[in-house]
Image (cartoon, rainbow, N blue to C red; front, top):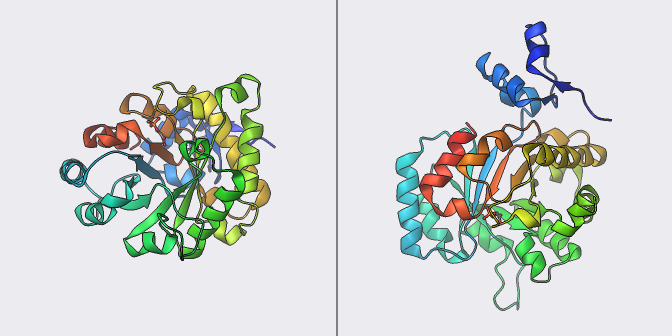
Length: 294
Ligand code: PGA
């Protein structure tokens, strides 16, 4: 059942209103609550981590990674309103871990479905933990396009959890699926298959990133209302499978997030942050997104 939407008028009419955990708020209502004393985290998800994750994909040499780190460290002052995570190519993990200490955490863009062993070219979860990673993207659409199916995504997600990493499970529909009204169904199926063997206790460590495939790297995004509807659908699916932890799961949006569009997206009631590709390559733009969400 849909939770009622609380508007700024509702809050003005009842200044002492207690806003329940998990409440849906309009952006104006959220602003108002924030002005009344920093109630925002408290109102919709007290324990959820708000996250801003950079996915560098196959970009940046070590020198370029160091330049980014210097610029970011000079630009943001911890503790930041959203926890920062950078997912560089594997080769830059160790360098960035040092260079961003205290400012951003480390994530991997992928991991092996194997624990360890004779698997040439694979980087396993334990290697990622060893180099200082706390997060690992799982099921990014570019990996799905390269042939990863839901079963492989589920195996990788399990490996990440076993090793103590937060898997960032990426889900999202294609343009055709959206056009035919199947966006929510596609997202539900991907979620259900990836999380089939995940217990409620483990689910607390999972991050879900809704990334419509047609918005990734294209400079176009759904409207905030459209994003809000899917994020709410994700939250509701989590509630149905594990009501006790659903509010604690970080649910992010990804797909052409930039400083110019980040404010309304990060202000959505069920949005706990963003997964950013192109704009995360530039420390100034990445910091701009952080500011838009602060
Ligand atoms: P984008 O990429 O921000 O460049 O659209 C997002 C992603 O692929 O995670």
